[in-house]
Image 1 (tube, rainbow, N blue to C red):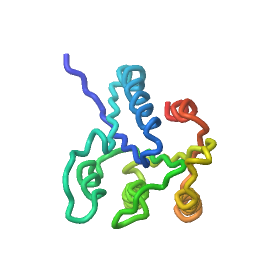
Image 2 (image 1 turned 120 degrees about the horizontal axis):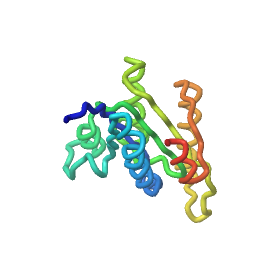
Image 3 (image 1 turned 60 degrees about the vertical axis):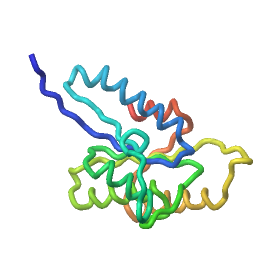
Image 4 (image 1 turned 90 degrees about the vertical axis):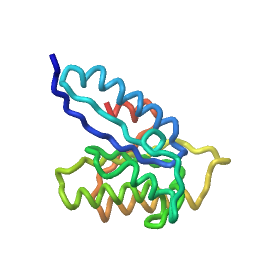
Amino acid sequence: MPTSLTQYKVFLASPDDLLHERILIDEVIKELNLTFGIRNNIHLELLKWETHSAPAISQNHVQGIINEDIGNDYDLFIGLLWKKFGTPTEKANSGTEEEFLNAYDRFKEDHSSLQILFYFKNAPISPTDIDIDQLRKVQEFKSEISKKRNVLYGEYLDEDQLCSFLR
């Protein structure tokens, strides 16, 4: 007999320095679907550019392709930053920032339309990986969302802690 299923879409935004976390979050979503989801007739779909955006060409900026492919139809936004802020777009200082601002604008219009979670990795960075400009931009963004946008963000030390928080 058919069962009604409630589907929630989760959008993941981050620069490519957090590739490992992006893979692990996919695993957490699959785990939650098998454990929590089946029991409660809930399915979580993870939206990320790697799986939900197709190769294409843009007249303006590549971020526009991702925005169009992902759309604005998701229930939960998860943003992650660590040592890299990302590549500037036409509308923001990085793709992750633009994706956050899109979610934040939607939240401002309708507080019940989505939930926003933002996490900053608080792990040591190898001296050879330090880019002062990128770190400064991450810190400025962290301060800005906290002070001007009333975002209570989380911090995590490693991938296990992030996965635990998300579960």
